Length: 545
Image (cartoon, rainbow, N blue to C red; front, side):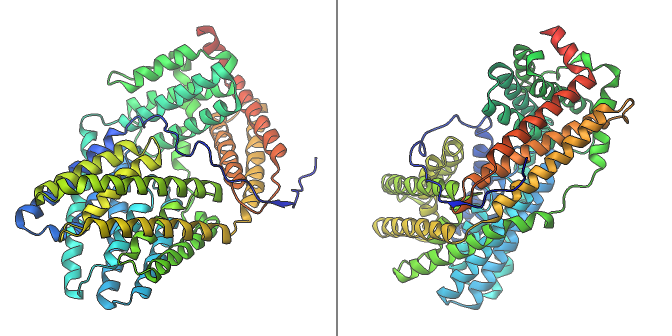
């Protein structure tokens, strides 16, 4: 079987159907929605009482940090929120310094575009999770066009830091009531996805289950100390892995029963079929001791994405200036919000962004008369839109944008009321300019290395498969070796699928080795099944079916 990849390039069609279809809401949609209200309300109300609502733009920088980390265990969330606050302060500091040193709009747009590229790459490399780089870019880009002096910079950063500290408290507070909530949700999701695969046996269900199991392990292995509840969750994730590797020997009903119990607040179910050898089987200590992949190793593949972001944001800002719009950062942020892992997904996000913003402008027309009744009404409308954006965005990006757009327009009025018609016209124009410029940059900056990453992923998967097969064949494998090999192989299968999906959506890409990817995935899953048989797990599970 030849490993050569055909070099024929082709343009892949862009989707038009299904882009605005609503999905199921996130299981925890209310958490970021309530958190952002709890983080934004106190600073805004204090500033309102002091008559300094014009400073809310700076406290918002810290308050919006509360949007991050909701799927992470609390130990990892604490670290993540600190990094988010520091990153937000860093971007804000650069923007405020630039704004105090020059009023040249072209220079400021250039600084904003470079900042957006850095923020995009760092968010993707660190896998910070939603809402990703968009919030960072929104704050820093808007701050570039707020007049100020160097003497004001420390005070404005201090306001952002104080609000960021409050956001950290808001983000960590739920851990006092349910300290293992995120890990429990991740484990329940893995069990449910594994049950769906055990019933349907489809390729899509298998890919979804593999990703869910991988995500559950990532959640569990990021928490540090192994408490008793976490050990029980590890055993359940092993059961989900068993169902993924040997679906015929698994009971979907039992998996769903475990998932329902884990989502609750009662004790974590403890599958007794793992016996006293469970700790040896899991081999988690060895996994915890292995160093994570350095962030700088993840930056190389993101170079095309960084260039797309810098070029697209700069073009959007310059075009907005050419049209005479007074807020070019709106166009810049629109472009920055588009960029996904490939051109096809970027196109989809662009359509969703434009539709959401246009509908959002109409919503602003309806909300503005109420918001203009008084300053308290303005603050309360902003809070309601904050909640609506986070409550709806998990159903489809465009639906969340319907609330984000009027919220952003209202924020511009915190310092003074403005004529709604002019605001709406500027926003529509900047949305169209930003989306068009952003997508043009995505098409111009090709990502030919996407196919090369498939080759790398195939090689990694083959090495992991050979290693796992060797451990299976060993007469007396090292303690924890089977589980470590199985988990490494499962991660390699997930990474290959992610690389293939990313490359499949790129334009001007050489023909992809789809058959090789399929065969590699099938071989990987067969070896995963062999590790399950070698561990003797499927027999005990089958006996319970």
